[in-house]
Image (tube, rainbow, N blue to C red):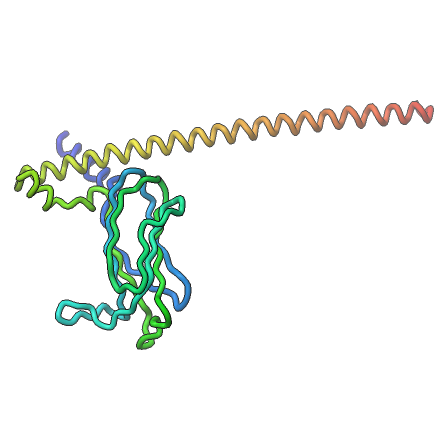
Length: 218
């Protein structure tokens, strides 16, 4: 019983709880390339990004031959959350105030994408929800460590699961409500269309009957 409960909790945590996501994207020779993440309201988001050409060659702890780029992060309603130009690396952090797809767009400055004949790549370390929480700071502030810290992490995971399940329930309710409204409108449209067809048919019969009577065919 206990083992099954923790197994289910782990599966739900993996599927439902927002976590860290690391991606690499190759930037086009012109234009912009974006990545998006669907995030609900009141979620902490943190991300680190950096640009490099070819493989991320590292020398003395720093990436060499780094091009500059323009970075822009927007909310689902188009509000600008982060905008930097001529940067090789950086980070952004915010707490969401809108539910939907948050967009991070990258473009190479000038013609630096041609440097060395190689493609410019951007590495993004995207963290949301419980994964974005600084547990070291929490441990120092609340003076907890070891088992207490792990329990605090578990409590945070459970709270995230609860919040995400509520979000999914609300989304399901909204989608069901939209579906029911759409079905009702389709039903009324069908009834209206049927009524119009019946009226038109009766008018045609009445007109033909009157026409034949005038011609004394009936």
